Image (tube, rainbow, N blue to C red; front, side, top):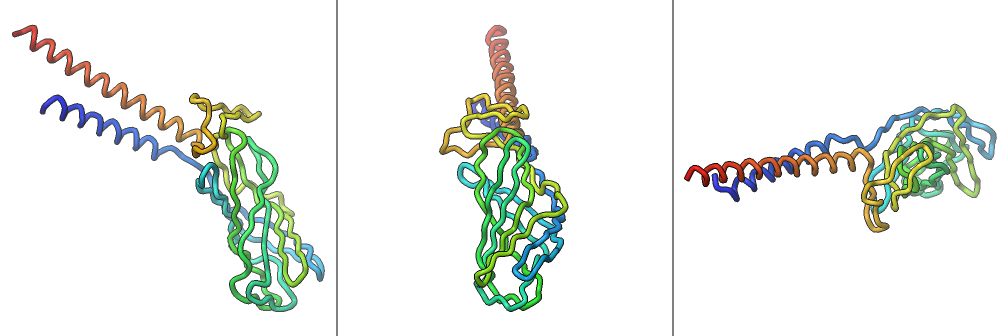
Length: 231
């Protein structure tokens, strides 16, 4: 095999090895958690338990966070026509960050019969990391507006986080819990921040490829040098 072909083959092998390490790096941890909602409605207090799922997908310089209900909560004594109910909620941030993330969604796509648990559509919002480290997302307050009334549902059972993301803040800010900034000084405002495990995987893959290629090049050079000396 010629020298250029050997070099190309070695580079391809190193790239594949780096990609395998990168794909193996975990980006997030999610759990479906049961939330016992206590809802203050216009006609009194109602309670309902619903499993909640929260997912995070990269979007621009942050993450699109989606909150999903697997069961309906609260109910209305009268039918809610199509588009009559508008839901919104908050997600509590923990770990390396704090505060709340507002999420919202479209009105009901179909009429909701009277005295029937109200199925909430998926609610979403955009989260931009402010600190580097592990950030948790826990279901918070649910607000249902319908027919000029407002129903407020709050978790009564202190639910566990439904999602944990390992994030890097733009600019490389570190969290008080000991998160570290990236070695490159952080990402620019127009660059999508990488999670910690993925950053490490990229660095490991690049280092492995460099060492692998350097070792191969050195071996070829010594082989050629030996052939020249024998001549």
